[in-house]
Length: 304
Image (cartoon, rainbow, N blue to C red; front, side, top):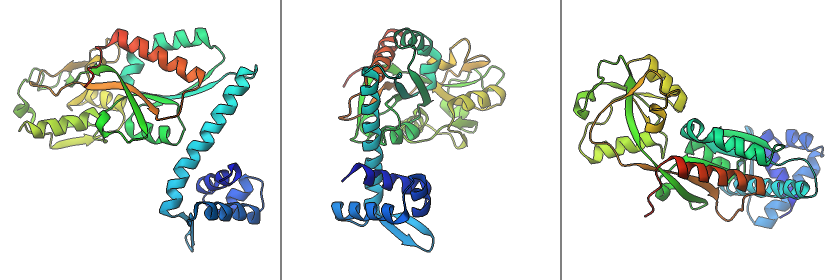
């Protein structure tokens, strides 16, 4: 299994055809086809399916594609780090972070990191699990700081709990249900929730059902945390999210916690990395700064 063969496989996936992939790699179609055929012979399985609809990937091809992306990304990171160690250009760190991290510790983390590595390039992505996990597994991001249930994470992901995060229901200050304490009183209200796998809101629905309490039946589905805040701030919708965001003097302007009782247990916020793949020096420094600030700012995570 050779570097150029894996690059050919990834390029076909990105380009959508053999012709476009060959053009992008400045190769002839025959040369690219040969590389793919040799790769299939090496792994002992057909990787591509050709039909009148174009090029598709077999299950084996899709499995290898994920690993190929990770291998190539890891090699590129190694080259970049060695280049930096020999006096080359600064590092590039890519991380996924949750909004509650942005609103609490990011300013101090960013200041400290810039002081240590002013030339490093940073890219931040939304820290939702549905986006962070594929990015980690394919090597597109170095690490994530996100809310997660460790038992639900794939084997490839290491999770280091850093803080326990309390989530609460919230409404705008003029909402007619402000002050309501009984879950049954909000059974017919409309909620705005992110129900993606592993989210706090998804945990809320499961917890309500487990405790025999009415789960929201009228839901406006939304995957953006900040859009959820705005929708609740400007409409008679009930949201659900980290208490630290709702009570933040800037982020939570115009919002008020809804004093419903009881509440679900806390959920761990932690550092997610790819198992067995070490962080580069710059990414390691940034992750260490996040760890230090989160442990100082938020309640310590309870370990099983």
